[in-house]
Length: 193
Image (cartoon, rainbow, N blue to C red; front, side, top):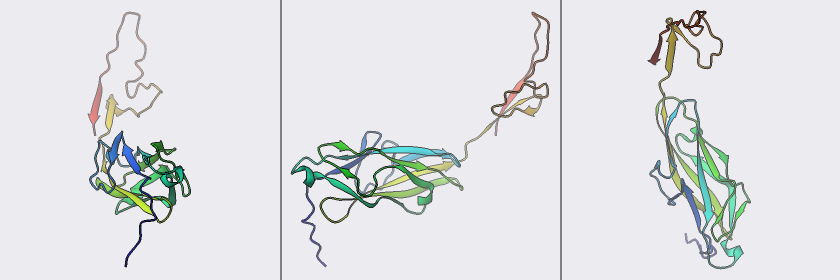
C-alpha cells in the first residue's frame, strides 16, 4: 500500500546528542563518546546518562517547525530494556519549537545492571509528530554489568567495617594510651577481594 508522507513538513529537525556529540537517527553502535555506552557499572549500582533533545528546524513558520511528543514519548525496548529506565524527558503532548530550541528537562536514562556480568543492550525510541503521523528517532544504548572488587582493611586480623567511627582495640583502630613522646605501632593490611 502507498502511504502519503507529504503532510509532514521538512522544517522540523529533531537532533539528539549526548556529551555534546550528535547521535545519528538509526545509530545502532553505542559509544562512550556520545554517552550511548554507559561503560562499566557495578551490579546493583546506577549510572545516569543525559541526552539533549534539540529542534534545529529553521524554515517555514513556528507551527510548521514545532514538534509534539507522542504517547508514549520515549520507549526503551530490547532484550535488556528492564535494566534501563527513564528518569526525565518529554511527556506526551509536550512541544519543542524550532530554531535550535532545547527541550527541558533533558532526557535522562538510568542504567541499573543486574546479574550476570556482561553487556546489556537496549534501544531508545523517541516518538513525536510534526503536523500529522508519528515520527521516530531511534538509537542503541548499552552498558557493561561488572562486579568491581571490594577492599578489605584489616587490623589485628579483624576486618574494619567501611564507615566505622568507633575505635576498637580488637581491630587496632584504638591505639590505647602512651606517654608523651612515646609511640604505638600498628600494622594494617589492605586486601583486594
